Image (tube, rainbow, N blue to C red; front, side):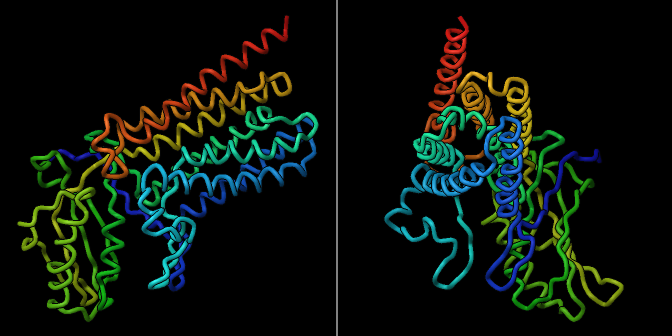
Length: 373
């Protein structure tokens, strides 16, 4: 058979866990976005001859405004029912009964944008000499673009905000949710390792999804009865019902899984299934944000003090949310109600920001032209 070109992503979203607490890659990338961004801001302020101590104040405003804005944005735009059903969960990073550390689940980039602008507006009201709202925002969007790249990379590690199915060679089958479930379902602690491989011996199925093999390696001492119960009663049924976004698993294949003995006296199970290869939309946005970061940094580096106030801000809004509008066509809806909308919520929220970017950029260069006369 022809070798199917697609990528299997089985990245673990957790770096490590201790009891109910876990450090996730998303959290690490989120923190790195601010730490690296702060160092770049120090560089910008040194070049412009501004006091570097101001960067610390700006960073505090940025962190607080981003978290509050992103979280409230997600709740208001995507899950408003949380406000009256679980109001404490809006900002609590854990569940109470039973206690489990979850982090802030659900952050919206549009909300983060509104939060940051509000925070910088409050900061600019202090009226520091030579530092107004547009001057601050022009430099902050450079950092925000880089932060966007880190955040979307975190989404990729979490296997979330997935793209629509594709037959392109860079399509990704996200398997980590199945790996996580197997660990939770393995109450007898008999699973040693879970791995995935392409199955090039059969063609794609009727839906065009790619054939795969799920390998589950068991610890020595695991019995055939335990293996059958775990695979048949839990894993394959879960794939067919709860993981339909990631696997096109035919229930008729449940009885066709194979168990083979290993050299150390243990067993390995092989499950035949079909994976759904999807656009890695998170990586598209991450790469675009990196390019935007270098574009904005390059423009600032060339003009610095002569930069038309508001120009970088406007360019950021146009490029960032213009691309976001386009990429949404390649992404699955995040919440069910979006399927009834002519365009999804991400696109609806992007339109006013794009229009604002066009107006701000036009006025910035018009004002600069007028001043130059």
